[in-house]
Length: 157
Image 1 (tube, helix red, strand yellow):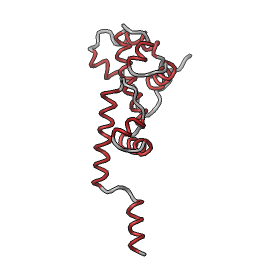
Image 2: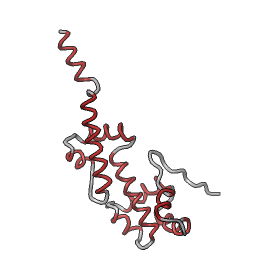
Image 3: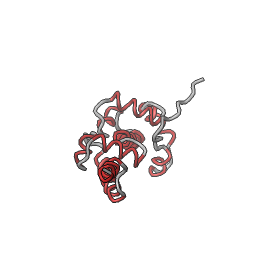
Image 4: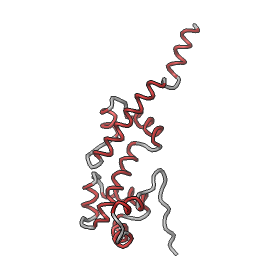
């Protein structure tokens, strides 16, 4: 009986260090894929299939490793790229939305506003003024969206 209880305990406990390292390597592959293919139609199920995990397991382990869900990380990547395109100023907000892989202008605008603190159209207007004369590599770092929390909403007096 004690052998059986030990087996059950091992099955229900945290993964062994070797398995954890393998999982982390797979999670890194998912993260790298999101970074490369952010503009492609990606969803958690497709990402999970690519590393032979269930979508639920991938979501839990990704959040445990990186502090946010795969979907949240993907949307942050898309918003970061959208910010760069909006700063450039040669595309409309709708064009930018589709260029970064979003299929819904409403979802894009909502997520953009949550991360950046203003709608994409306002960001586009203000970005041209705020980053004038600053090298693009510095502007990208300074205007990077806030992760894992909503951006503070500017108070209106």
